[in-house]
Every structure is written in C-alpha cells, then in structure tokens.
Image (tube, rainbow over all chains, first blue to last red; front, side, top):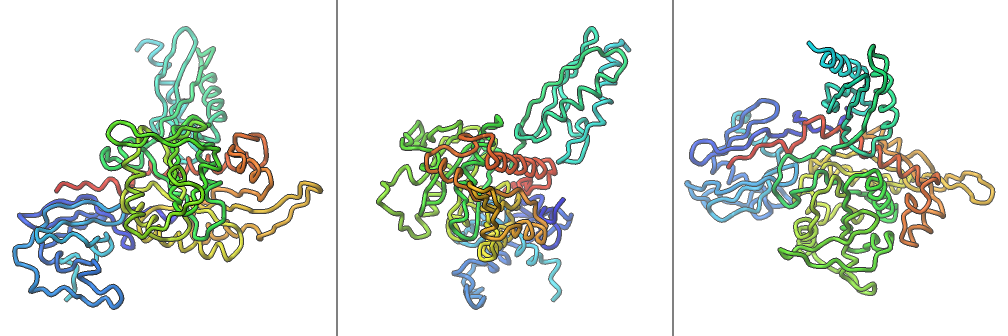
Length: 112
Length: 362
C-alpha cells in the first residue's frame, strides 16, 4: 500500500468507537487500541472554534468561569473523515474537534 | 462425497491460482468466486469483481477458464464476469444514502482540465457498466453542461428533490443549469455551503457506484464544505506538468491530507503535444512532472493525457472524446485513468481501514 492509508497511526489517529462514558463524559476507543475518556467540561473548555480561541494568536478567549460546571454533550456527529462536532447543553456547537486534536487532548496522555 | 461435489471443490482450488493484480490476493480468498456449477462435464462459475472497469477482466476470465479446463473430468468451462462495486461508507443514512463512492476531482490551479478529466472519467466509468453520477460543483465556471452538450434543466421530483439530468448514462447536476450564461455566481461562504448541501442531499441521486464531483480550483469554501458533509472515498488530483501548476496542486493535496481525505492519485493533463501535421512530439509544459510528484508523495500515478485538438473539439461539441472517438489515443488515455481510478477505489474499500467504520453511539 502507499503511504496515504489513514489506518490510525500517530500522525493521523482514527477512532474506532465514539460513545458516552458515565453520565456526561465522552469515550473514544482509537484504532490503535488506546482508550480516551474526556470529562464533558474539560472538552467544552477546549472548544477550538473561532469564538473560543483566537484564530490568529491561538489565545484561549473562552473564560472557564463562563462555562457552567454541569455542561454536557447533548448530541455528537462526525464531520467528514477528520473530526466530530459536539452540541453542548449550553447551546454551543461551533467547534470541530479534529481527531488529531482529540488525540492530543487525551487526559491520560497529558504529561503535566 | 458425490463426484460432482468433489469436482466443485477442485474447481475452487484451481481458481486459487488466480490473483487480482490490484488487490494482490487470490480471487477465492477475496470471495469473488460465486455460483460454482458442474454438470455432465460442463463447469460454470461466476467471478464477481469490485469494478466493471477492470482492465484485466478478459485476461482473468481466460486464466480461470484454462485453470478449470486443466482439471480431470472437465470438458467445458464457462466463466461469467460480473462486478459489484464496494462502498467506501458503511453508513446507509446521511446525505447520500445510495451512493457507494464519492470522488472529488481537484486541482490547485485553474485551467488544468479538471472538468474535461471529470467528464471523460465519468463517461468512461459509465461505459464500463457502472452507475455513475457527475456533480459540477464549480459554481464560478460550470463547464459540465457545455462538455456534455446539455441544455435541458433538471425538474423537481417528489420530496422537493431535484431529478438529475441524464446524458450518456450519467446523472448530472450543475450550477450551470440554473443560471443564464451571462449571469455569474458572486457568493460568500454560507451560500456556497448551502449549495453543496443542496447538490448532495437535495438531488435524487438514487443508487450510484461512483459520484464524480468536479470541483472549482483552489482550497476554499466548496472544498471544505464537501469534506465536512460527506465521507469522501478519495480525491483525484489533476495537474499539468509545469511547476507553477504542480506547486499549487500540492496545496490541494495538503488540504485533503489535513481533512483526512485519501488521495486516489494524480493525473497529468496536457502531458505533451503531438503535431497533427508532422507527428512530432512537443512537451509544451514539460512532461512527467506529475509523475515525479506522485512518486515523491508516494501517491498512485493514474495516467497522462496529451494536449490535443480532438479533445478540445469534442468537448466544445458536447460529446467527450471517450464517446466521440473511442479508438483514439486520447480516449484510451482517459479509459486507462478510469480503470486505474476504479482500481484504487477497490483497493481502498477492500482494505477495510476506512474511517467510516467509526461507530458512533451517542
């Protein structure tokens, strides 16, 4: 095969399953076998849309205190082949979370 | 075990020696062998390929025939070749429920012949027996109606869906159907996004093996909307051989990579010119540049199309060269590209590592 098959290696991670975890959280099982659990509010605060993150500087515009503690995903859909969109209970749904971003955001892989 | 049943097993065993050259595996383990029958010395099998546009169909038929005839007790072998195009998407809902493969034809630069390649690719696939649709998503310069000689307009069907225009066994939709020639589309992003949604979900495409999408040049709103709204099977990149086009084509490749859309391969258009008077070849834009890019990017090279007057003449007359002059060098070049594209689609779909297999339960 040529080098362009996106089989889920580290440079282009692909989920195998996206489901709910617990009451509010989101679970992604990656093709690599790794499992990521994203707490709802953590993922909401990482929304990459132009309203939440300055498009040019990358500065986070969204203030954590503006997001309620009980924010949760109300629905979720795939975007093409490269990401997903979450509709949050606070009415926000602009951000497209690319699979690459989601893999980077995996809470258990954060070093700090 | 009855003798006929044993022979059926022998027939299947014999067919294991035949490989699909694109998929690199034998046709038995690929599940292509169907309906093995044996009666009174006569063997009959059906081989179901993954595309009717298979370049080695006849060769495989003959190999299979010879393999079966070599068995003791077989006097006659009938091999039927059929095809069932596999889908790149396991989801049967969404905007395009009956469409198995969506293939955008893209370039970075304008004027490299995307629409001509799209039209000939679509017609060639349809000629092979596949069910094919062609969406002209180039709202700024819709050329498909001219290239296919269309003047009629699509009508509205039930459920407010548009019924595509049928020409040369293709289902066709174009912005050109809805605009007088002296009017232009001057739209901002959200309108373009709406148009793409309308052309995907608002059209009665029905069951299609391949939906070819002729994109406008560049990496803008239409390309992005398309990549977001439907899972694409893979893009065909068209470029001319000169650096100025190839450099921009690589931008298109980068865009599809970023959006995780596979690239099926690169087509080199206007590859060279052969003088119609003296027959001398002239590499007007250089030659082989697209092949080099495909090699350096590890992408399949789908083929090259010469720059020639007959392609232009038939295009302007509304009958693509693959139909107007099927025996010409140019038509054969397009047919090879269609076969190579179909082969790349089969390879990807049989590999089964496509992202549509993402299970979402939410």
